[in-house]
Length: 75
Ligand SMILES: [Zn+2]
Image 1 (cartoon, helix red, strand yellow):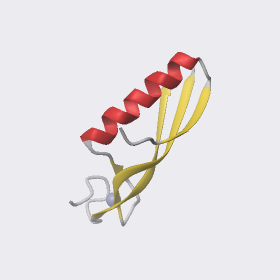
Image 2 (cartoon, helix red, strand yellow):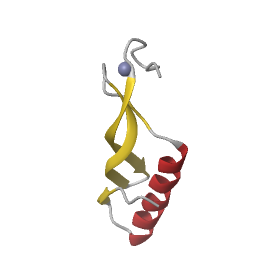
Image 3 (cartoon, helix red, strand yellow):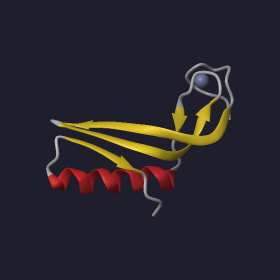
Image 4 (cartoon, protein in one colour):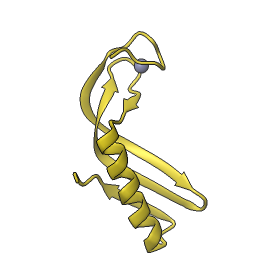
């Protein structure tokens, strides 16, 4: 698909890092499968990946860590 950010690049399958902030918590998920823009590097995460990302963030949030760096685990 064409990237909606730069509008010139096309996305290719790759891996990306997802960063989320919730209140005082920061979560970094690495190696998430995504479509990545070849031009600007903007990642697009699919529905399955997004659900799994949220699941892992919820788990990390319950642990109470202020900062969590996680590796994406396929569901
Ligand atoms: Zn782009």
